[in-house]
Length: 224
Image (cartoon, rainbow, N blue to C red; front, side, top):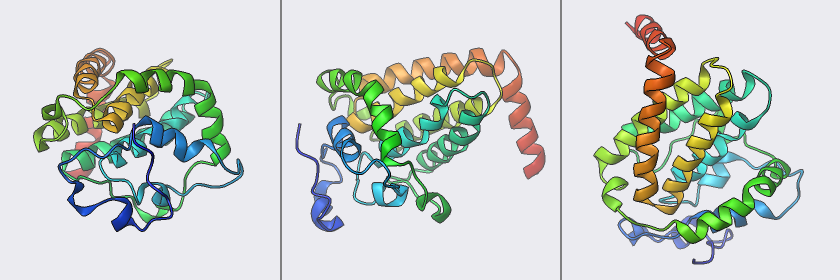
């Protein structure tokens, strides 16, 4: 894979303007290089992390957003990660090619030490996946309709993650991690697997329990 872009370059040089239709590798290796080294106490602002990324920005945003879901405290992880996942999914549904991050979120982000610990746990698996995942089946990633469908599933999974469904934080967190890797590596095969798994999860955990339907109904009542 290509080397990650030089963080010292201005955005126009680090991300060529003509790269819109050409895949520019910002995959797993870039993700690892971005967080692996540096002062563990450094606070990494989300806005700065995302500013020079192009096609992988949603994948990196989602990767960071799901970190709280792996906190082993019931109710905390989902309450933090769920709304961020919903925000990402809603923007994909609207056809955005790069995420818009509100200022109060852009000024926040994980400490580098937190990323170090998380990557220490999953870094080996990510490097193995790095050899398997690759850009393929772009028709499941690039068209607006495909992005919108992925966004819809992310919104529904984000809602489920926010709900107090016992013992599901890790499950939804892992599923959303695979979504982020599919977006990072532009891998349509993995995205197809994610679509099928997400539909099963929504049907089983959402509609079978009735919690998702109740939550959506409450939202509609508030809005209308």
